[in-house]
Amino acid sequence: MLIVALTGGIGSGKSTVARMFKDEGAHLIDFDYLARLVVEPDKPAWREITDYFGPKILSYDRTLNRSALAKIIFSDDKSRKILESFTHPRIFEERDILIKAIIEKDPSSIVIIDFPLLFELGLNKKFDKVILVYVKIDIQLKRIIKRDGLEKEEVERRLDAQILIEEKRSFSDYIVNNEGSLNNTRDQVRNIINELKELAKKKEVESICL
Image (cartoon, rainbow, N blue to C red; front, side):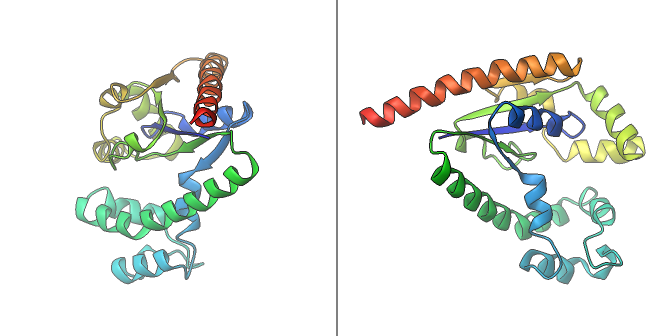
């Protein structure tokens, strides 16, 4: 099995690229999905979050009000780190369960883990390869403002909470430039997945020889 991290800054189009890799036959584990799963009402992480931040971060249906929570954590590093301490251990537990299930069904597979905070958590060396979805910062700003309807200052605070995407380039094995057309992006994804398939075959042969 080849376990590959897919990352990128907010507004880079990472989720679209992740779906393209899935379309090309890779298994996909989405950390954003897992992050929502572990904070469903009455789960351990949800209880810890509500105990710490109080009922003001809950919606009428008792789910987390993500917008209210985001305003708190992106203006206070301590709050963000505390939130991560509640959620990350549970997210990694869910990831391990999914990887184990994939190994049992398809031991020679390529697993793409959509991991937004890969570099921020210093976990890039835990993967066989790292793919970065790249767009320039000014494009990130425009996309997020248009997508989420946020003020420029709010978007800048969120970007400040992440390592600059230009810095992430130097630590990545593959770069998907997502500033052009979808067809151009898909061509890049296909080139990368073909290389990963060759690496997976090589890794399988080496494991057999050992």
